[in-house]
Image (cartoon, rainbow, N blue to C red; front, side, top):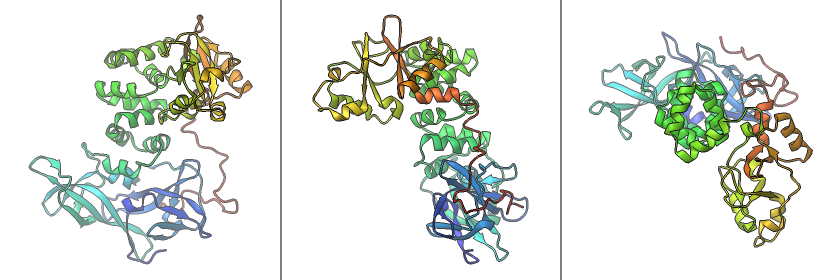
Length: 434
């Protein structure tokens, strides 16, 4: 283990790589688990480590041999069971950062910006220092560039008590590099109150992306906790099919209120999707695939599929139709495959390479029929048309998988997951958490 007296700041530790004794990377530190006690300094019991596959596991500090700048060395013994926080445990990054505390020197309140751990002669790691920023008592707010202090933990009161006005900026700064699905995992693992605080601190676009990756119960709870105008803005930022699914989980009266607050054009698409049965092409489709006219150049079409907000399945196809090009479009012509566009001259029009053999489905096509069609033709998306062959939208393979998998698939652990390195035996997560 690192030498006794080594001081480690948790905010700097987050994101640090974890290695086994052979130098193979195990994962990255995402948080530190501490026990906040009534008497005595909080004791750190382990690390939350993100391993390949977006899984977060618990690594007891008894299985850590060294914590140094830029790396953590473990014994190589890792239990791959997904981390589940216990009632007695507190996450430093997830729950302590931004918490309001009282300074016992009588100088008032402050916000926690970091926590320092030090190893004792007994081998335990204790929280010994707290890095705080004083509150501005004149305005009743935190001064962003105000005085900061590194104080002994004994001089701070309130670490174990959640506050009503806890922010989330420091937590989000630690996770700003995460993809939406990974940040959704972080939120799901937080307590209900903290989850709502963090979600509220996200901007509309980021929150919309994260909501699309959360289990339905979490989605509904977060949306219902937002002010109605903010909730409507977030729904507008979501894909129409995801917004429709989320509204379908709300009480009818609240869903109607939100639809009224949304921009008319955004609400129109969502209302149309809500009219279809869940397990049909109409209920599964998005109304915003890439739709272009046949005269569009390949270069312009490639620019459209490069859009950052477009998921890979929808980026694999361009849907070609007569004007108007917003759903429901003019007559649907066919699709152009991304690979085909990459093989042709950029100045050619997509109308010359359109594939008319992909037969679209109707809005009432059942899930099983859609699944078979995607599998038969090795497609990532499928056009949906009405009786006049106007394009209504597209069903992507990720939407189909969402409906084929169990409703709690985002929360279900993979019981068949093995150790990170084949020769490495598993250790029960209970180790080192007395």
